[in-house]
Amino acid sequence: MSRNVSDRCRLPQAFWRATERMGLPAPALLRQAKLPATLHVTPDAWLTTAQYFALWRAVEDLSQDPAAGIRMTVETDTSVQPPATMSAFFARDYRDGLHRLARFKQLCTPEGLSVTESGGECRVSVRWLHAGEAEPNAAADVTFAAILELGRRGTGRHIRPLRAEMVRQGPVSEAHRSYFDAPMRTGCPENALVLDRDDLDLPFAGHNPELLAILEPALAASLGEIEAQSSLSQQVKILIKRRLASGRPDVADVARELGMSERTLQRRITAQGSSYRGLLDEARQELGRRLLSDEQNGIEEIAFLLGFQDTGSFYRAFRSWEGVTPAQWRGMH
Image (cartoon, rainbow, N blue to C red; front, side, top):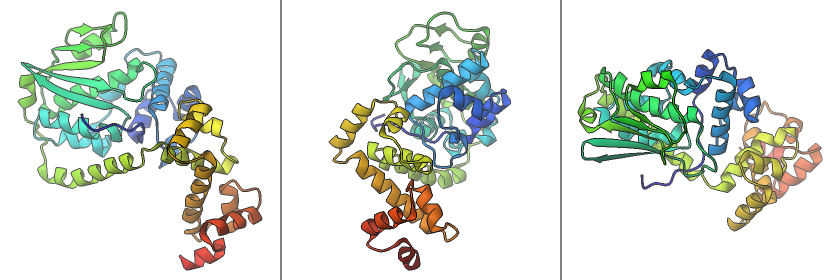
């Protein structure tokens, strides 16, 4: 993959449905992971690598199941997969499906897949460009299982990898050995699944070029949206907007949610030619416009949702942003 992978993604609802089936309700997982309590119901919620890892560590801790990632993937029906994953099942063959999965993987997780063919092997390796710690085993298992389920469900055959290479130490569970049905190596430098190259030519029974023609532009546009908004400043503004209603978002809290120190965050914002106060004003201005566009939102309510202590402060700030009062702006738009 030559394209840089941004450290942000939207976690698909299929994740929450799968954990619920395992007896792991979203509130319990989010508490364990120390993540915002409304993350699972927030439509525009984004996850960083650190947050994604924290969720999977919570799954491991609460489930006490070494094969939780495999079970969640196997028990998830293809029909409830997000479009980014589902499109791979409509591919021409296993090779085409793998490349589609790798291309749109970032729409589901802040992760990159590398697919390389050499000799009689195809190596699918996992890359976390923004990871500051080791990938949780359950997260690695989900990726391995997603790759295998794609081949097995797409071709209707029991695809057996040549081997699975895992970073984790020590022996794997019986559930792992039964599922992969292949040699498994631990203590490897990276997580990778090595496939028989001949299997990549196997056709997919569900190949649907008409549906792919519909899905492809939408997925490409979504990927472009992530890349366009992947700057640190945009990430900070998104987090500020989430926290505004509870009061003025503290820079230390935002830094913690991004998985970095307050000092590092301030330094990186400054390097991009901005400041935290400037981003706070921009976030309030953008959210204020959106809230004012809905006539059901009262001015006092909007002032509260933007974190202002009183309506007068909101009026003064809004006039400095737009040159008109909130009521005048609403009338104009």
